[in-house]
Amino acid sequence: MDKITNLKKIIISTLDSNKALDIVSIDLKNKSSMADYMIIASGTSSRHIQALSEQVLEKFKVNGITNCKIEGKDSNDWKLIDGIDLVVHIFNPEKRKFYELEKMWSELIPKEKVII
Image 1 (cartoon, helix red, strand yellow):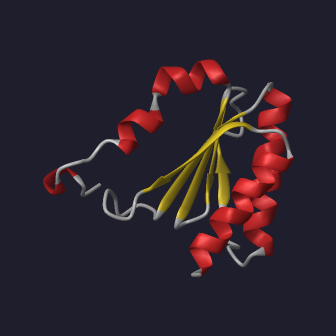
Image 2 (spheres, rainbow, N blue to C red):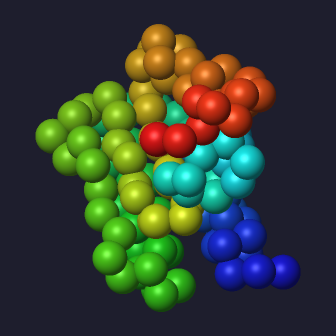
């Protein structure tokens, strides 16, 4: 198993054990050059979303991804943890439904539109 796949499992396990809701993993390898995987999860409150994002950031750092960061620090509704080859979005359920990232990234994208 490669390092990114193993890290993906660690992140999903961390989110699950910390009571994140509706955890989804999307393979981006043939869809985008920005990352290999995207994980999307929901938190139950702004405090829960913040705690989840900090837990994920810590797992990245412990596993050697030292230049990762949290985007959306001032937001109560959404956090993005950029682990370079693995991107994690944590939303409140209403914002998640509004943006529909799963729908957007799960659909097959023609090769001409893949370049970001």
